[in-house]
View (cartoon, rainbow over the protein chains, first blue to last red):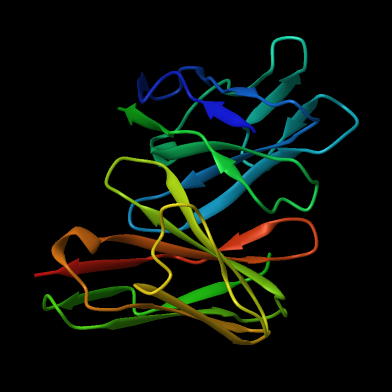
Length: 114
Length: 113
């Protein structure tokens, strides 16, 4: 069985400040890791994913996440946030690289303040 | 990326009635679709896996007779909430399995009065 823990339910931060959203997972097998973003009253959009290769993965809008196998973590970071980054962020794991059978974390609400 | 639509986006129904929610993959065929339920300020909980042409696989604790799933074509899956009650009020999200990831619909907010 696999599980995902997002330690922070809410993260308030000022605009242009850096942010880190934490994600830890547990699994008895190799996993593939995903970050999704959900804007209010919308579905989820894939932000980035780690399947293999370089442990640092990046999205097109400035977010990045690093897979740390020894610490079983996949924290999401952005060096400078914008108001438009305000959303709910979900970390998820899957035991296959097609991204099905996802197990989601509880979510972290990022609130960017002016 | 691939587009998945849901209809309706919002629905209000009276207790005891049934509601059907449609999930469509607009520009690709999806053998497998998923239905999730999301309570306010909580994560997504997988309800069932819908496979085209076969019976859906329900997660533990999900009543298959209450949440009827039909996946009659490679681009359409439907979720029918039968005899809805106020506790069924929630945000329902579907996703369609692509080659390398799931593509999520925008969700349907169901309110049962």
